Length: 222
Image 1 (cartoon, helix red, strand yellow):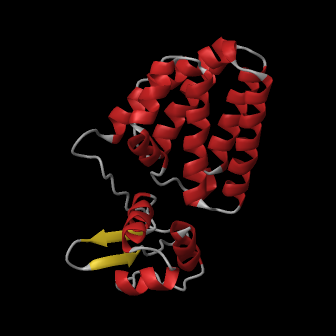
Image 2 (image 1 turned 30 degrees about the vertical axis):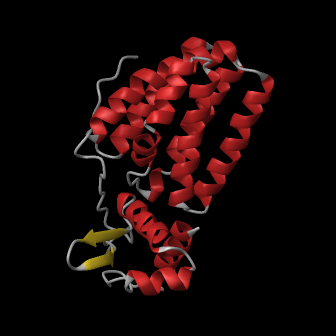
């Protein structure tokens, strides 16, 4: 995957901090991907704060601060349509209700799917694989929307999938990566116990805290 390969090159400083990336034609050839795939990968890396895309100048690796963290430079591709705050407000309302429905409607096999997702989520957090972390996070929430048995909720999630996935890519500090893992665990525990009140509560708390971790404040109803 181009995103993972580029992230590894940045982490290992094969691509030096503050340095420009090679021309896209060369980089696409090196990674054996199309230029369209490379552009999407660079856009993802810009969203999670690993690179900075500067029109007319090129793409640059983000510099590190005194704590050794890459300086965040989130890029929100959908600013002309919705703000990140609007996306999180929608998620807070829709996904907490979906979690309540899922707590009443899930099967044992579906709980197993969520447990498998949790295992992958923990592994991505341990390995600091930011791209995989965001993708697995998105898939977790998509599963819960589907398990709600409300087809309109699931269809809305699918219709806005690119925007919702982008919201999971907003940068989070490394020392905070384990927080969403523990929050997902609480949600799964409530679902496993068929506790709709608990599932809704933990989903609301999770989304409120996730928004806060990326600098967004949403009104929380607990």
